[in-house]
Amino acid sequence: MANSNTQIASVDCGNGNTAAMLAGSKKSISFPSIRARITSKTLGLGQGHELDFTSAVWHDNTYAVGDDALLVNRQGIDRHMGINRYGGEHHQFLTAYALARLGVKSGGVDLTLLCPPAMYNDLRKPMQDAYSKQGVEIKLKDDKKPREWVYDSVNVLPEGYAAVGCFMLDASGNKSALAGKLAGDVVLLDAGAYTANVFRLHNGAFNPADLPQSSIQNGGGNTHIRLPLLEWVHGAGGDLTAVTLDDIDRTLR
Image 1 (cartoon, rainbow, N blue to C red):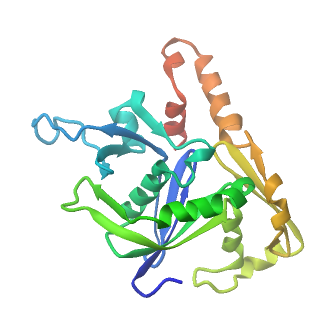
Image 2: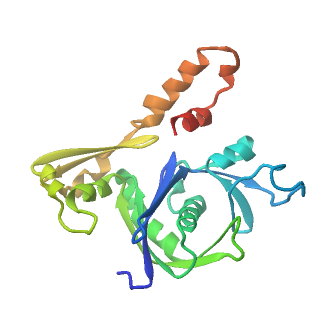
Image 3: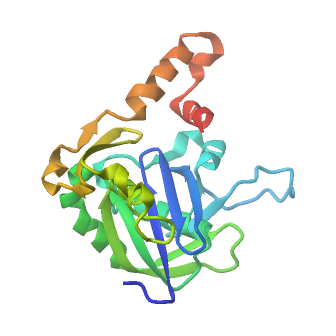
């Protein structure tokens, strides 16, 4: 449990976007889950004469993040994709970057993470261990010194299941008037970039036995929105054949 000096946060690092929220201030942020490594060198031409973008120093490397990564280096994009990404270095970077952008500078963080429900039993402990074994050090572009904090507590929930709380609880954590919407048998669908997660609830209760069958591969926006849109744009011919999925994503955002 968090003490009075611990900041409470939740970060969802998906294939497409990273979304985070800081309790108390209720600040939130969302950005594409991509980065590009850059040099910190400048030509010395002054403001307005060089490309300006947000960046962060992490493990002795400097990265442009989100849409800024596309501006800097489209050929060197590092994407947060694949089963092995959960709890990995890129996952931890996106989490730290999101929290830093939300204002976390030091102290402790009570962190909640999310992972695909079908992989929850396998990923929960490794994710907790990866985040808990060492502290965080990250420096944003305009920071005079690095931000440093530790994760006092790391909780992992199945993706989509946290949405149940939006119906069960109000902003103060008390039972919401919307809780009645979960009476009886309810199906909750969480569509991500690559997978879709389906939960069957009974009176708001989740059946853990459903976990292995709860994620649908290729059931998300990539298969049903991004790729069809890209094919349609390419069909127009001409210069539009150079359009990429990154361009589709930027347009959708």
